[in-house]
Image (tube, rainbow, N blue to C red; front, side):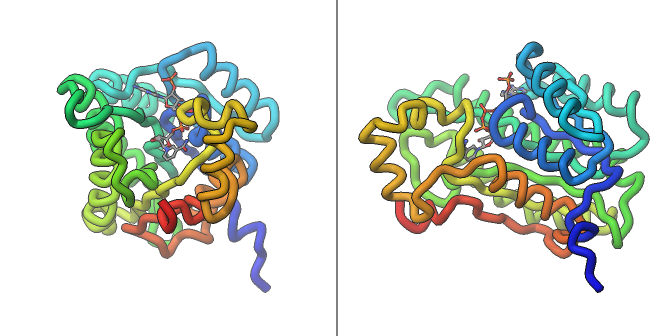
Length: 265
Ligand SMILES: NC(=O)c1ccc[n+]([C@@H]2O[C@H](COP(=O)([O-])OP(=O)(O)OC[C@H]3O[C@@H](n4cnc5c(N)ncnc54)[C@H](OP(=O)(O)O)[C@@H]3O)[C@@H](O)[C@H]2O)c1
């Protein structure tokens, strides 16, 4: 008889979630711990918020949530995070490349520095952080129980958002990278998939949802086919599925987790 708890269990898994102090990253970290992960490392630049989230999640689960402070928009940040993880762990089961930056503005006003910052954090870092942690991801991976790499794209990759051109382009790049990296890493028993969220409650989108009575927010909710923003359960549910036995036959895939947003823009 199929045991549904085992199917979605992440018992004993060691995970890393970049940008795990708030929003989607914190939802996935909470999901992994609730599913039985032994250790979840979360990273961000702002130490106080990051440490508070790590304490909160550790207190609420049997596993441990560990904070690693650093700026992942730079090669130095990638090297430092990799060095810390190599000191602490002999393997990793899950890497979620979640830290990301919105914006970039319209073409007319776009500054090269803004374009570079968004491309670095959203597209270049996920690739090179995965490369820096490759040996740890390989170490425990088997074809029955593969390691997982997850990228976080956006509905902005499927739609044309001229006001955040750099952001949309960086996320489209991630989606194109997904099958290529999945193929490159398949013989190492590493699965590579992307989640493309629609509108979720987080710090990044706070300006849009902070006043639920605002007419602009109500209009947006009417337009989204699911008639709501996504939250903790939506994000944690899909991330746990992808990283447990349940998701072991997905690789090179982009999962649109958007309540149908891209169907009615
Ligand atoms: N919320 C949505 O509706 C939505 C929709 C589609 C896609 N996404 C994607 O989901 C991911 C998470 O976004 P979110 O909405 O959850 O935003 P958020 O609440 O602002 O979280 C962003 C996280 O990334 C960290 N971060 C930002 N810049 C960083 C850097 N240079 N180095 C290391 N960490 C950094 C932040 O902490 P610090 O600022 O302290 O570093 C924070 O932990 C992003 O990739 C975003 O593009 C979000």
